[in-house]
Image (cartoon, rainbow, N blue to C red; front, side, top):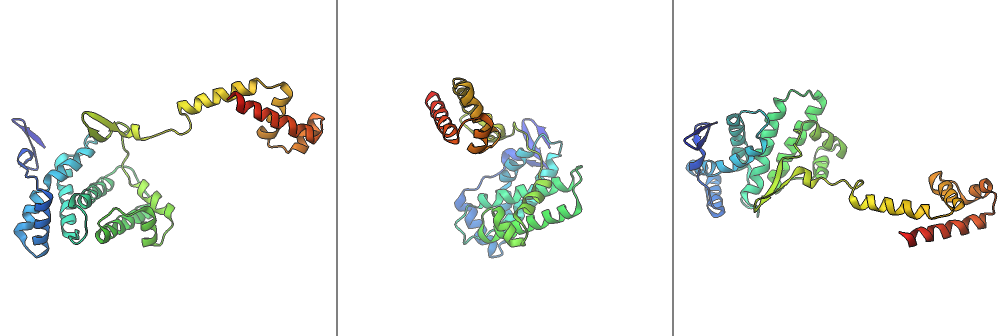
Length: 259
């Protein structure tokens, strides 16, 4: 890739002059391509190079040659054109983008320095082939369950195989941008355990427990901390089971009230 007087060239293509097709134009060219019109196929490829360009931007900063990624992405685009079913009510870009991404990921995986076991790699190949096959049938991204049924393998095997050949994603990688506000991967990752709300709840619970008497705290510790029955607590504390039950209920009621 090179920059000539402010115009970016990839594989000798001036990206500033790339044509953008409307959806209606794309569908018409797809129809003609399916009928064997080679000129329409060439127009369709050149008219969707910006789609390839937008996809490879997501893989920037990984030390890969942009020209190589662009060429690999074009292979995915051509596969998408050849396999797209015009009878399905799906936009071409919805089908094309995953095909382009899949082709680039396959290239990155094959050129990765990280070693993956042969059996895991073979399973990943089968999963990706099944993915393309199912996408060709429904024009939609298949679920993990659909892939598992297609290959007659456990769901976990599909997940492990794909994870093994998946490229790491930066927490700072943008996933959405609108009006200048960019949402990164880290914004999509939520910690359900260490939230501010959970932290405040723990403080409130500790404060409510501290307000109990020593015997009530001891009973709750035995019951819920050590998992003992009321009869076992009764024997250890030296009071009746009925008294343990009453003290436990009163303690829980007090905690709920104070929280």
